[in-house]
Every structure is written in structure tokens, then in C-alpha cells.
Image (cartoon, rainbow, N blue to C red):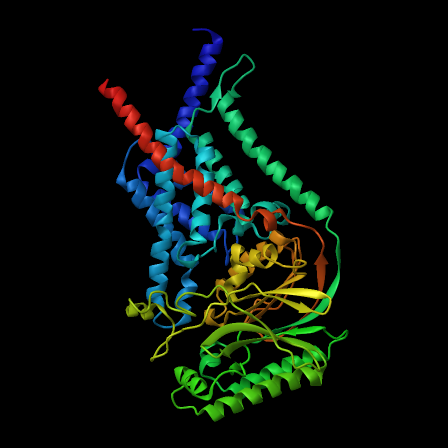
Length: 574
């Protein structure tokens, strides 16, 4: 045996030994692989935010994808990994109500099914279609994140890319790929690590061991994409030019949801008035005061003059069987007088979060709305929420499955029946145009994109989020809500302001940098001069092209796998 052959044999032995040490430990405890991935990935998100762990957290899970044995334990391990991630991640669901533990467990169990699905599609790609894990894993993972954002109204939280929301240089590609592009990159790094640990690594040369060519290609592809992403981010940040925009006072109230639902409305208004006085006393004075979601504790009632008296009586009875129509009309008069009077007395425009009841000649609608009122003007402009939260604002399939009410945080005979808004209405405010996302709308990419892609005139200058996170008692939900919303600012290169009950109210610029925040579980006023951003965005034009492409490829893997199996069977028969 020649010296090069000896060196190659020794190098191959070392590689096999390394693979054996890693593989043997997991092979002896296959159920631990997925669970380990789930726990490691959870640490990358709030509350711990050890975001660097996301780059290796999926290594144990993807190790299962390259094992040649067909063992049901691999899929059980992936499912346990999904549970290990989702149970602690969405534990804040149980805080909404003492009975909400059922909704928490149901949601975590449903979401955990994504993990064995990822594993199955990756194994199909690797073993039947001979697609390298480095390519298959990021495509499949991103496809299922995109699918999760749409199925059953969608839950686009906890994308892998969201864990990197503080890594500004990295996440600038969201203006082209959304957060899915960062997810793709992080998964690719995880897959590359698995390939380096499980495939032959070195070969011998007269100058010593060298990386095998295929491993070199994997490393250079992964490293090249990472470097290109960081280079793009560096350029985008360096060339950003912001100009002064409107001054906004963001009100952060601090009411637990039980108090908002059953508390004294007058006491709530007194607390808000104190914040408004504080905001109005600021120097320089704000151009706009922003209230949190449904901060106004009474109904905002609009009445079409063409509604007949009998029809109005019927519509009012749908909400309250005991309140006379006269009292309803008096409440409407008082509400308009109070809010217009508050705006006129301060001389400052206000964006008010309220439940909006709209009476028309043929029907009555109840909206979750943002209402813009300006000084010395009786005009009322409003945006009605278009993406309602299932079980919180309406119950899907309630008429056929009334037992679904058990998954809501509401008791007694109350059934949430808000009406979906139809249009992504932009609110003109002086020289500016405001896009308003209510509650979780700022976490849904395709919802916020509607304000920009469907704009009949210039695109919005500012994205405003009004929200009520008082349901979640200061938990990690507040941090995660802010983390996900950051990507909306980058996707459209627009500043984002957030006025949130219990927090976290914030100002985010078009780079996704969180410039100002208020502490959670406190009330206060965040005075912010909004930095306008004149840059354009590819995501506004293209939308979720990456997610849709990955989903199309992943769906195509299934028939291709059956076709390859059929051809293989025919060859064996022949």
C-alpha cells in the first residue's frame, strides 16, 4: 500500500469514527434526537433569546432524516420534538383564561405535527429522489412555514428567521424574501452541519488530509449565501437615509383583560385622559396621539340616516335585548361629543381603538376598528380589522360545531361575532398616509402587504399597530409579538409605531431597528418622531415568492417519489 493510500485509509477511518461517535449516541436514544432539537430551538426565541442556537438546534432532527433505517421511532421523535418546542413557546395561550389550557394543548399538538411532516418529506427527498439534505431541508422547512401562515387563517409566528430579529445585518434580506429567507439560510446551515458530521469528510493527499470535493461544495455554497446575505445587509443599512416625519405620542395603558372586560369604563377613561394630558404637555407637541386597540371602553356607534326605525330596533336587539333604542342613540351622541371634544380641546388628532357598530339600512356590523379624529372636524375616518383572530374575535364553524366555544376565553352566553373588514383602508393624515394593523395583523405578512400592494395612490408612509396584549400577563408573548412585527418594517421599508395595552409599545425604523420602547406592564407615553424611509421594497412587488416556490417544490416531491418507486419496482421485476 502506497503512502497516499494509507493516508486516505486513515483519514476515512477518522471520519467514520467521528460519524460513529455522533451517530451512536443518537442511535441509542432515537427519541431524544427530536426532543433535543425542540428544546434547543425554544431557547433561540423569547424569553431566553439565545438566537445563536438556532443555527445548530435542528442538527439532531435532521440527523434522523439521513438515517437509512426505516423506524417509526424517528417520526415519533420528530413529533416529540415539535411538542418540546411548541408547548413552551405558546404557553401564553393558557394565560388568557383559566379554562384556556385546552386551547393551549390543542394548538401545540396541532403545530407539532409539522415536525414529522418535515422529517418525512426530507427523507423522501434524500433517499428516494437523491436530493442532498442541504437543498431539501431548507426548501421543505420554508414551505411548511409558509403553509402554516395560511392554513386555518394562519399562525405566522415562530418562523426560524424570527429568532434573528436583533441581528440587523442578517435580516435586511427580508425586503426581498420576508423572514422566510432568513429561515432558509438558518436551516441550510443546520443541514450543512449534519452533512459534515454524517458523510465522509476527508480524503488523503500528499500534502495531508483535505475536504472531499462534495463537502467543499456544500461548505462553499452555505458560506457564500451567508456572506452574500451579510454583504447585502451591510449595504442596505449603510445607504439608508431617513427624514423627519410626524411626531406621535403612543399611549400604553396597563389594564389586565379581565378589568377591560368587566371594569368601570369611567375609570378606564380617566386613566387614558391622564396619559393624554401627559402627551399633550410634551415639547414639541405631538401631531397624533395613538390609543391602543379597543382602548375606548364603550361602543363607537355609526348610523346611516336611511335606517328605518323598526330596522334599527331589530338591529339593536341583536346586541342588547334590554336597551331601548332611545338610550342607544343617546350613547351614540355622547360618544361622538366626548371624542370630538377631547380632540378639539387638546388641538391634537387622535387615532382611537374601539369597537365600531355600523348600522345600515339592511344590516348591522360590529368591527374592531381604528378611528381617526382631527381637531375642529366632524369627519370620522376608520379602518376596520380585516384579519380577525379565531376564537378570540369570532368562532369558525360555530353554527355546525358549537362545542368550539370551549376554546375561547369567554364565558356565560357571550359568543364573539365580530365582522371582517373588507378593505385595507389607508387613513390620510395631513401630508402622510397611515396603514393601521390591529392586534396580531402586524404579524401576518400577506395582510400588511395589502396596504402597500393594493394602494390606489402613494404607498403608506407609516405603519401603525394598535394592540391589546393584556390577555397575556406580561409573558414572552409581548416580546414575540414585537419580534415578529419588526419584519413588517423591513419588508416594506416603512417605519412602524406600536401602541399596546400592557406593552411593548415601540418605534421601529425601516431597517428593523427597535429605536424606542416602553417597559412592559406599565402605563406611559412614548413620544416618537417617526423616521420616514423613501426606499422601495421587492417584497411589496413580489410578495411571498420564496414561500410559494418552496411549497410548490415540496408538493411536487410526493408524486415524484411515487414515480421513482414505481420505476424502481418495474426494474426489479424486469
